[in-house]
Image (cartoon, rainbow, N blue to C red; front, side):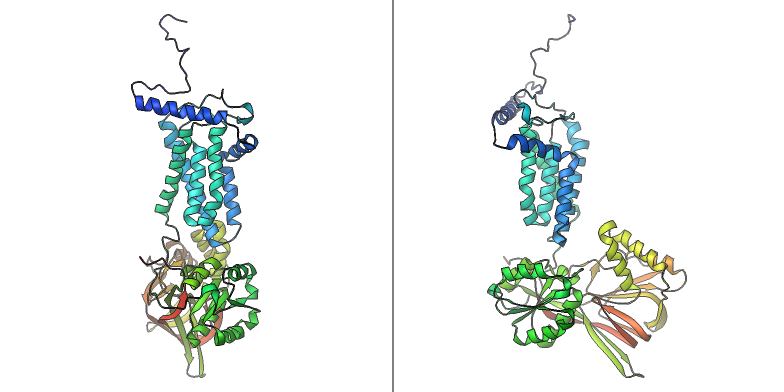
Length: 510
């Protein structure tokens, strides 16, 4: 050794020098004692389970697999929880790796007190503070819980076990884990700040109306569409509301069963897709009954916008008597020459032109590639068809239209297809038009890419209480809430404001 070289043989390089900071020195000493206490403690079964669990969380593999499992349950809340969990994990991981590890270059603990059976086969080579595994675990669990408390409670023990495993295997000091967990929770809340949860964007609980409270479901007669694949949802509802009457009907018999149910029900219930719910709404309006909607179809736009995603949501609203008044869209078509008249109601949307096929194509791809890319792909597919724009008189002028869309209340959306409504009683029709004419491909693509609030020669959007379209050719197809009818002559679309009483979970009034 050179004469001027310092003697470092007595310095523990696993612990940072403390200098003249007694509080820091005490914290470091406490951290070391806790680490050694964990190393000395034996938990039955943990020596084999925790190291494997810790390794499974490398690169987020455990959490991606968990997210896939949650999403596979195919409920909207579960899918949102899985996506939010992964997004929170990604932000936490990026923060730890770009800022955390580089800001505090703390060495890993010495493994001398850790039994060999617990140690990881491959020791981490990055700095110790903070724990990236703990940050990812807590970020994922917190993100999931912010969207779904039930799934959050299911994931939380796994996240805690991963965090504990980092100390148990000797990979981190306890403070590394605690700070990593705090950063992970912060990342989840940061994601929520950027993208609010559905609970934060719940439709307003107004206009609140008086509706019967049904303890145990007594007085509810619910008609379930057997063709909608509803057995599990109906079973959960029966368990939650044992005194409710449930009638399972074949698709062709749903209308008749709804009429029978309305004759003896205090509250009319329905389980099915948007078309089935539309039929139930007509019956409820005719008989002056409040409506209880249990989603059971593919899209379930009305139920989800209402805030009812599963049987538990509906059961809580029914037992508490929580209900609101919602608008109902109405359309009427008359052809004076032929003496024909068609009328109906819609809770979601009414459309003319190529819109129904665009929606079908977009919904097919949305879950795979996202909303806006799916809108563009749907437009490209429509370009390959032999569809022609329809001709009609709108606002006193003859126009060629690729699409005319009227939504019951204002939609928040991207592209030319609807997203979500935050108010189901705003008294307005959300009208969207894509004009026909030359270069239809450019027009459809422009509408898909820009969204409804960008005015251009290709499209227009307006919020109106009433809309009239004239000069429709015989056989013009009108699609409404998944149903189809044919009209000719004139078409008038308007609103029945706050006409239907519907149950939905409401926050307590304080």
